[in-house]
Image (cartoon, rainbow, N blue to C red; front, side):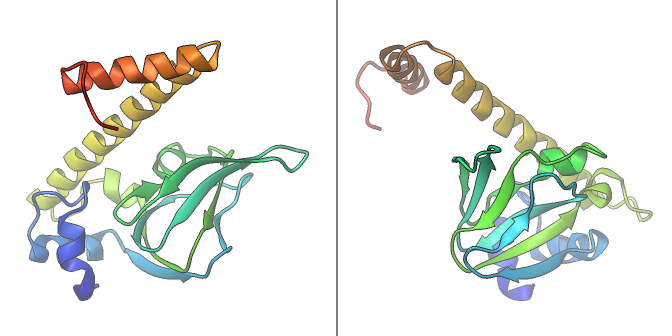
Length: 178
């Protein structure tokens, strides 16, 4: 994991932590690095998980399939992004999406129970980790809330205008680049 320490420092969940703190917390979390080849299923719809993934390299797709085999890409995960955290943090919840490797990739799997429970050493960097995790979940919830807000509009025109209006508000100007 040493080769990823600089990379991990720039991720949202390890933000504000030193390399030594990250090394210590990864041991506490029983982090496991796993390799997947393109097309491999990482998490399968209909199953449950206690782990969330942090993508170290490659690309991963979060897909939803209906009973007739129609696939919808729900999210594209890039290096530094997480997946599966909502399902892992809800004990007994069943995944309604699958997570599939879109290219050869390396993933750091983290046990959610070890993230949410303070370790016996009650280290200060674990408290940082929990704060960072909560902030990360909040940002993701806000992003999905915006997406739902736009997609709930009736017509394509209304969806586009909703998106452009939100971008204008966020940029604080009627002129902006997308």
